[in-house]
Length: 218
Image (tube, rainbow, N blue to C red; front, side, top):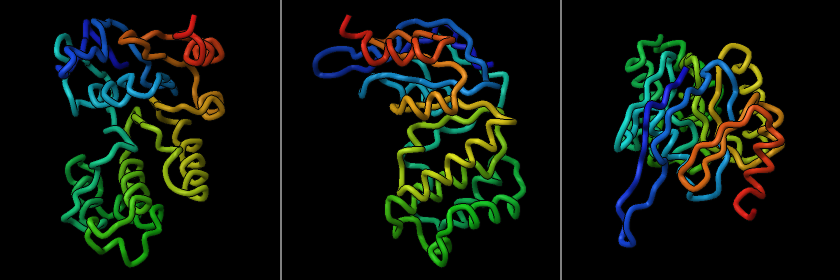
């Protein structure tokens, strides 16, 4: 489980404080596939960063009883000054995983060819996506944090990602940010909507999508 204990987050801006999350206490099942919906700029990516530990709440705590990945799909994953292979082995080492197994998985999944041994700074955005996604799923986590990863890259890459989602969700949970109702209905068991700084849970996906699409106008 992922437990938010009176957790809140706000940023200071020129216009004052921007609230991402009002004080919130709830538990998110880490063994299920959970969608996070919200308008652009609502703070969905920031919420994933807090759950992963990349960022901390201003107040309160977030505690996980399961192993949780870093947010997949966010920029800044791989180091520009290392090759794709070096990145894969470095991440494997940090997570106590078998470097050979991770290296082999990433090389096969990302299909970067000779670029796998070139510096990441030479990669296109699509190549970075393939590398970052491959490294992330090369490590076994109880719950994967996914930030719009299915919208990255070309159709071939998206289809490959979705096939991998289908395989992983049989043994791992997912917390997925997506704007695509079809993806949510296909891969998620429940949903939460981040609306005006409030995280609203729904067990019914249709109700969540309806609130996300129309709730702010009612």
